[in-house]
Image 1 (cartoon, rainbow, N blue to C red):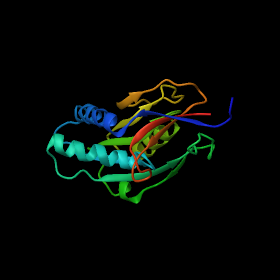
Image 2 (image 1 turned 30 degrees about the vertical axis):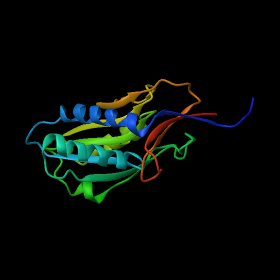
Image 3 (image 1 turned 90 degrees about the vertical axis):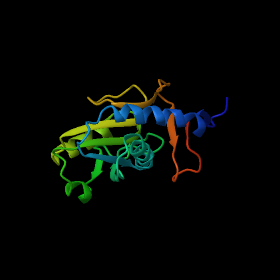
Length: 183
């Protein structure tokens, strides 16, 4: 048997379109009319996903532009090797300048794996005074070791511990898809 990595496409862009529509509908049900809504995308791939959801939410809710605020959080490399023992978060001054107490924040990431990034991000947003924080992920691996969950989830995938879920999201990749990487 070869030691080469296998890549399997689990969802194509066409198959992800109804997933995003369902996520948009799930997210829309979480928000109270008249309450400000801010969308926060975790860099890297959570930020373009947040933009996709924000555009769809604007259309569905009939609201003005929903700006997406990026938040840089890093713990793992793409191959899930540990980069930082404690999740690294870069504070964003744009968030500190918002009135968050009466707002709902939708925090978006690509994959919920251990839960460290979402937990650190939620704690940061809470320290800034966020009244309500909701989370959305494209993929939940169903193995979070932290007390966090996704309020909005595209797909739940239970895969072998050594396998990697790779969300390919433009502009970082050319094609929007979800791949399974097996070593």
